[in-house]
Image (cartoon, rainbow over all chains, first blue to last red; front, side, top):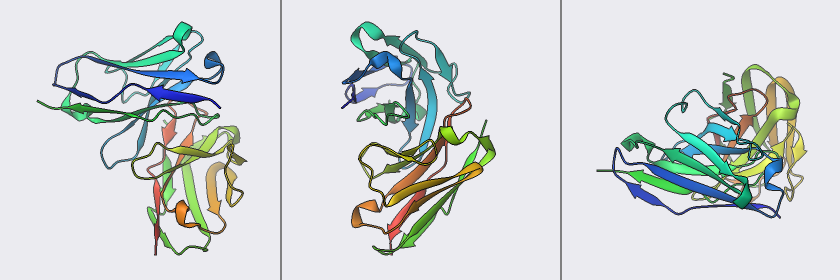
Length: 114
Length: 108
């Protein structure tokens, strides 16, 4: 059974940078796109974009383009979500997920506060 | 961008009743590219249905997905206590992929 395991919760200040990770196991990591999904407190799911772990090609939602960066290291079956300058409005739970196989990470809570 | 609108926002039902959740798309969605998820408080979403009508591994057959084009439906034939949750549809046929805003199924 495949699974995705995400890095732990983070507390950051506005303007700081951050990279969170998502590691796949139990399936062929390069076979499926991995999406990143944001869920702000008490709100619904927002698709941020996806990365193809086989070649690191990315597709971003216009709402997130330019504010986040996806990357992948297929040698360690891991994808990353990165911010160069966090804002308080980035406070949310972030999930990584495949779609058709239904693998979801447990979520990484990012809190940005001065 | 394809906008998905879910209806109703909240569905109040009793255990044993039938639930019918709708997901309308602003443009036609490939039937192979529509998914439904269940999310309970404090948990990651769980895939229920992909390809509009295919149940994910381990999903009980009381969950049925149907529809095509712009109109999709998730039916829960008889609600069990563990089915009270928020449900989301997602289209993944045209970038940017998008989610509906969710339907909460609550105990009446």
